[in-house]
Image 1 (tube, helix red, strand yellow):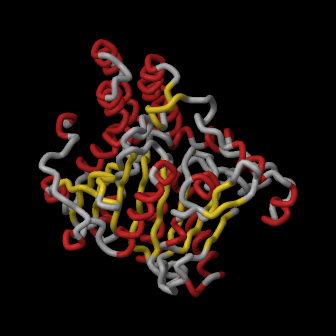
Image 2: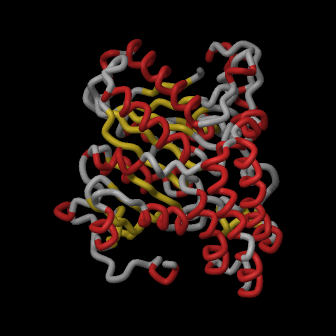
Length: 405
């Protein structure tokens, strides 16, 4: 399993260790290394430049290409490709055990699991696996403190229902289209329930049925970038990552990384296909236990992302049944200030925080790098909503209330 590890630029011995997983499924974490929160960016002449807002300025950073078959992680045995979160989380637990055995000087540091997009599936599964391993005294103890999901897919039943509400509010569809597309949802909801009880075939059917909601919106919305509705899509992943692929496929770079002649691709179609039966599974179910055991969760979302929009994420967070759920629902929403300017809106109670990030799409650390680094610092170093720090001001009304169903 291929990974990058970057020591903290802060050079503090007790800086936290942060694991990052990119989604897809099947997209390499090198996307984050070079375009989001890694220490470097790739210039047009294929050289590296420092990222002023890399998360290594506040933490020791691990980026892993996973599941197997993603990026530079590979196996010659197709049976090593994963199709569910049990396989994914076991592999990642084994990786973390090997990592901390190799680097025991970091084993006692606070450990946080983060990522975005389809990692809304990976992150809860891996966090639960680490938490269970600690409780069972299995292997080396890992000092797990929290997990963060950025613009993730976590609870499909709730998030797919939010598609039309978000699309209508953003002017991507009209009222008639809204009413017509909503008629698909009952079949989607039923298919998700069958996926949870019947297994693989019903899960693939659920993927097809539910994604017809998203596809119907896109057919009407035109050539928009569904990762950032302010922009047009230029095909493929909607973004140009060619500099990264050209850089990583240079012979000198491959030799330096020790990956031989293996060609790098940003996202693996094969891994994507293998994970299709995992897509519609609800990964929220294991989170309440983690929260109640004191493992903190930050869910954050850029406001202009359609595919894993902030509204759907806000709804599953608010609907989650845990010991602090009623207090969380009643908690005031506050401004998240960066340089005395409102960079987002945050609601927090106990172990749970939700942050809606302004002027950002699907890839928050790419669109708002400074705000994303501040978010990480405040969250890992204490409370992201410390009222005594004067970084927040109360917002009188939650902006999503008009959407509540």
